[in-house]
Length: 135
Image 1 (cartoon, helix red, strand yellow):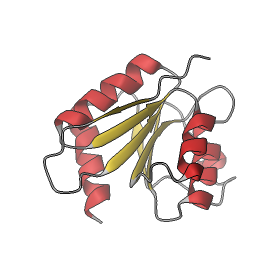
Image 2 (image 1 turned 30 degrees about the vertical axis):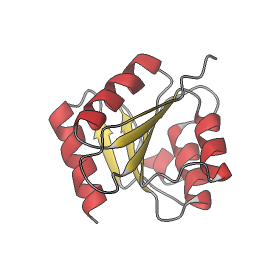
Image 3 (image 1 turned 180 degrees about the horizontal axis):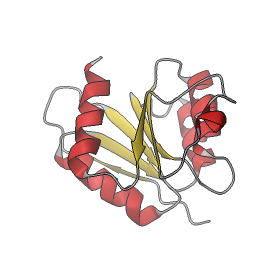
């Protein structure tokens, strides 16, 4: 799979929050990144969840928030959340999906802080991000 790993941002505060966006659709990941960048956040976009984990584990970048798709090839969003929380326990997480079942969530010890049902609006995404990062 061709991994699209990009870093973008236009800081509007002293230390803008870094957000990892993981989606197997590079176009959707870049679109989410665009909205977040315009809102003043720094983003890293990954189409491969294992690449996002590798960057997180390397210490190269420590995100405050992870936004992940649920259904992806390789590992799913819940497995990504689980492994990410082992690396970075205070990481906030948003899972985006059209169909996450409670039974699936309960199989993992770490759960997303919020679930955004697809399709979601830009306004609901930004509101959720701001709410989680305010904590």
